[in-house]
Length: 391
Image 1 (spheres, one colour):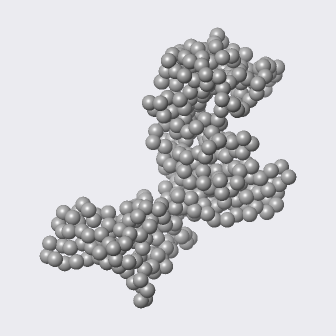
Image 2 (cartoon, helix red, strand yellow; image 1 turned 90 degrees about the vertical axis):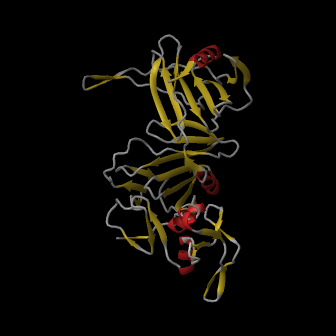
Image 3 (cartoon, helix red, strand yellow; image 1 turned 180 degrees about the vertical axis):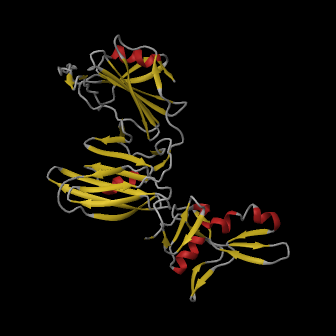
């Protein structure tokens, strides 16, 4: 089949092998000068001598490179992106084989760059599914949002991967995945789902919008050269705001550390730890499997209750505390027996639940934000916080 590859060049890398050697290998045997020559096409000046060009990420890079060898021979080099744009030729890059791709490419299988995910649309919505490439991925892709607008905060980390962000009644969910045979689906409602193409971090992305009597929703999705699919959904969010927030996604420099509690209330034990997008969340539950405490650690801002909270201290740390809006009431659900197996269910209270108290603080040394919330009182949260240590 035929596949058009998106342009991949940005910044100084825009010149690829033609310019990547300019200040190192080429300079070892000759001299290099930037922007010495201009470029004219069919009598029309396209690049003026002495001027830079603007890469897709906004950086200024050399418009041309003049190399003078030891014998005085001169050769001008142009960024491959510039050449492709002047001649109207598609340019792409196969990271697996480190090959520049010019023009339309024949892709023999899903193992080639850019063809890992396939879209299907029907009356139920939109699905992106990947073919299993046979690659043994050891974990999820490490990406995180690095620039949340004011008012937005990380609400929770989902057990199956991905994160939820809230700002008032507006919500954004973010997930990303390698092509391992899995898939994503979005079913906002019945009827037509408008779609337009936008650019996110140099990639063509599909932006879907849907409006109904129940509210507005949107989906933003794209695939990078390595086959990673980026998936954003929004509820009551302006689509352009979703694109702006998604454009801040970058490889996570490191994952926030997981912590363990040196002290927990009687009957409490570890329940689960989830990590995604550079953040980590750990939950402990009570013996009755109804009361719970959750710790979230992230470099991103965290969702906090309204108001300024009360200033409190523990172990030399200054924090903010918010009382629960209403007392916690135990869930009266009884265990169920299915096929001779007893199933006990539990409910984990999220940070927006009315029956949880919240304790939050920041570590100035690491830049990490911490939030403890749970169906317990202030004294209990402070004591748990004071006993935390990195695993």
